[in-house]
Image (tube, helix red, strand yellow):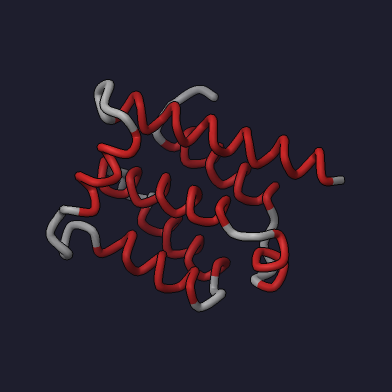
Length: 121
């Protein structure tokens, strides 16, 4: 069971890192994340909203908001989605379970984001 979760976590990390690398035009993911966090709060509002909901344990609601935003895809929405799923992947299994969410759902959500943006995984 632990091996399965480790594999899913690694898949999530690989997809997120690859997308960040592609989208940041060869910058490291750390650099891209730093630049995104330096955006004015109005431009970073979606991620801040999602992160606040995650801290409150309202992961399903946060994902619903994300997918509403993905109806009008943009670089900022993609950045928020990647950061959101990376944040979720960093949570413990117990925290995810308490929020009624799973690593499999993280992977599927990230794959859906890739599909929306036409990025093969």
